[in-house]
Length: 126
Ligand code: AMP
Image (cartoon, rainbow, N blue to C red):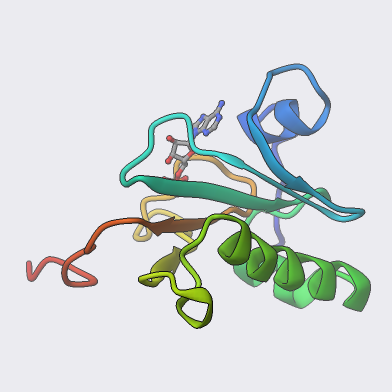
């Protein structure tokens, strides 16, 4: 079963300029913007501009240029938002919710960069 990309998902609309966003950083292949419903003082979403459903889709099918650009953008967002420990920040969590078990709401790859407060344990014990 291959990947099926929904061109009407909300992040595709943001990339087409049909919905506004609060851009943190834009590069050739990536866009970083503020999450509309932040879970912490820092909550930025980083997405590739290409039509990739998820992290597994992206890491298997994206070009080397896209993959490098995307990872560099994540690093740059850590700097820009002040969460990077080597620059005096207190750290962060990077999350890529994927599929049904990952409770992914928007079917376009996004990594959440979340920080600015102590985030607690990674997962609640079920
Ligand atoms: P996920 O559950 O990982 O798919 O997370 C989707 C995220 O997208 C949530 O944190 C939402 O708050 C966020 N979100 C949904 N619509 C928008 C939007 N128009 N602009 C910014 N963030 C959004």
